[in-house]
Amino acid sequence: NTGSLWGGRFSGGPSPELARLSKSTHFDWQLAPYDIQGSRAHASALAAAGYLDESELQRMLAALDRLAADVENGTIVAAESDEDVHGALERHLIDIAGAELGGKLRAGRSRNDQIATLVRLYLLDHGRVITHDVVQLIDAIAAQAEAHMGAIMPGRTHLQHAQPVLLAHHLLAHAWPLVRDLERLRDWSVRASASPYGSGALAGSSLGLDPALVARELGLSGPSENSIDATASRDVVAEFAFIASTIGINLSRFAEEIIIWNTREFDFVTLDDGYSTGSSIMPQKKNPDIAELARGKSGRLIGNLSGLLATLKGLPLAYNRDLQEDKEPVFDSVETLEVLLPAFTGMVATLRFNTDRMAELAPQGFSLATDVAEWLVKQRVPFREAHEISGALVAFCEKNGLELHEASDADYAAIDPRLTGGVREVLTVEGAVASRDGVGGTAPVRVAEQLAELTARVRAF
Ligand code: ARG
Image (tube, rainbow, N blue to C red; front, side, top):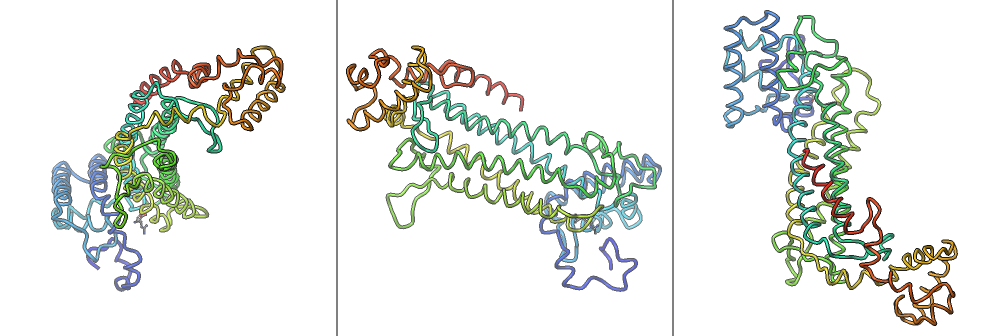
């Protein structure tokens, strides 16, 4: 049973069916650099506790360096007979350092505390990559907002014309959820930075190894408080998958709008050729595939999260092999976002906005009816009545094919004597937008402040 980590009490090797089921090297091999990093820290803990003398430690670290280099350049790979990354690397370490020295490294650790630590190291690394990618996307959105500070578009609720808003305000509404995703990743990283190493299989180690030393060497904040929890919990992995899902959902909602805006009927945006695709049969087609893939992949990210949560539900303490099922979904979430985010950012950065078309549509659909009601309130008409009067004006204009400002003074007076020609002063989209000047509103001065605040918040990442 050479090469296996657990042959001693067994009369023979695993059945081929078990070996095939049990094997995880096809996905956990990518944790090899982290496993070696963990081994270096563990070797130092063994030396500090007197289980390796100075020369053994130096030879061990040199062998681990060599192992890391060989893994990196691909001269060392997992063999068909390797169950997992841990066994494969021990086998290769023994090849390099000899059975005597190589066989000492496993003392006081288990694959259970190893894997719980490695998945954190992996996620912390990729969390940094994804943070960077999200920052780039926010920057692209902010740049588009800044370039279109004067443009007004129809704001919608229920996908119906509601009130005019600045295009920049609308775009920044897609940036803020991503800022919260950055903040989520930062908060998550505090919890992810606890180090399970030293927890052993579940109960800790009897060898007097110092888990704080290992945590320090790994750049983690300190050892986990409870060895059972440290080896059996995966909420840190699930939380990462949740954040990946919210990022996916936030992209998907923006994507859906870009897809709609890109239709002939809306005609609000033009996609750059480099960020859109053609059809194999229809020569005229230019499709928003990046946006559609964002929308589609958000479903996949949600699936990864819910699969993981289902795996965790009902697991008794401590480690169970079910926990091996945490890796493929979360690896997939990482890979999905790392491919999707740069493409999405490129699409957003190169999007061209048809602001004339937006401006033309902004006042349509009686989107200034609220302004009529609020003008009446400023004339001290109770809002209930003001709402009724404005509604009656909408009905009148709809019946007569007029816009709100096109009705005559006599028409206004016939609807209600308190409705006078003076109302026309608020019946421009510019006036409507400028008047919504409370904090967080769509008035140009507020949106400029908002953009400055967003930029400052993102600079912290
Ligand atoms: N490959 C396992 C995992 O991903 C770690 C190995 C633990 N195996 C075991 N039999 N205790 O969780």
